[in-house]
Figure 1: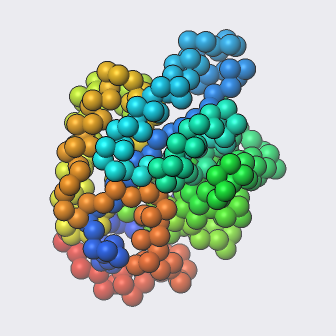
Figure 2: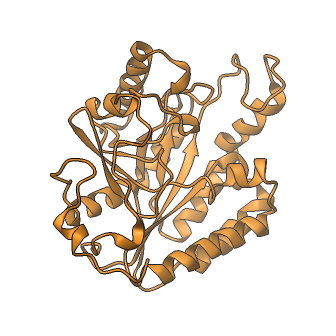
Figure 3: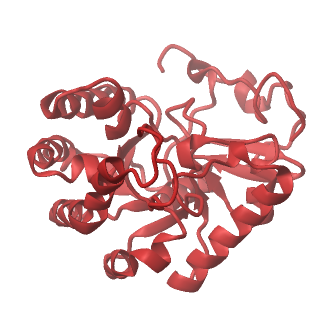
Amino acid sequence: MQPQVYGPFPYSPLPRRARWRWPSGQRLMVWVIPNVEFFPLTDRMPGGAGNIPDVYHWAQRDYGARVGIWRLMEVLDRFRIRATVALNADVCDLYPQILEAGMVRNWEFMGHNAHNTQRLSDLDPVNERVLIHTSLDRIREALGTRPRGWLGSGLQETWHTLEFLAEAGIEYVADWVNDDQPYWMEVGGHRLISVPYSVEINDKPAYEVHHRTPEEFCDMIRRQFDCLYEESQHSPRVMAIALHPYLSGVPHRIGALVRALEHIDGHPGVVWATGYEIAEAFRAVVPPPSRQRGEATRAESDVRTGHL
């Protein structure tokens, strides 16, 4: 898209939106997103000391692949949760056993760059396009199916990213953390769905930036759920729980995650979903807009207000 002061979608205040419901009548869809990432030992580590090799910070993340993800799998199995993995393509070659275990569980995999010391915002347009296509191609080779969703490493994009993603067959994007409902985006004649992700209910900023305790993170998840569940009696909501195996998969934090999931599980009208299931459910009930940006639709002009 061309540089612009607002996103490739109209501003849409939540209380004034047309009413809609999920196709099966659910109130709240909750998706769990383990970020399964690879960090080359030959690169500088994010947040590290700048030296190579940075054994201290690298080994902490490798723990997530060697131990933490397997602990998370056991927990998600307990709640019958099909995760949506944000997958670095290099994992296909370095940690193939994780892919095999995820495929057995029928998890969804969405693109997440090639490896996690890389950001799209550091690349020129030619190399960004190549990275997106080669990452998705490598995942397709490993899984047999091409990812339909994308989460950029560090949630970073450029002015070209959405068009490159649409060109590569991506149908939904999770980088834009600006809503509690999905919405349509339009760039270069392509339409994508933004599926709500979170930098709040996300163990990385919670533990590494805000230094929350496991019990505080558990309480954040519970309170996020309680608010969205209450609001969802009026209109649908999406809740994302973003996890990193090297953080939530360690022994002293895993119990807090279990308690948070126990709080959510079993509520009427709540469904554990994947990113693509959320996008498809939204597509089924909210067709893409056939209007020019900034013009009110008939549904918006007829909307009832009073509740979020």
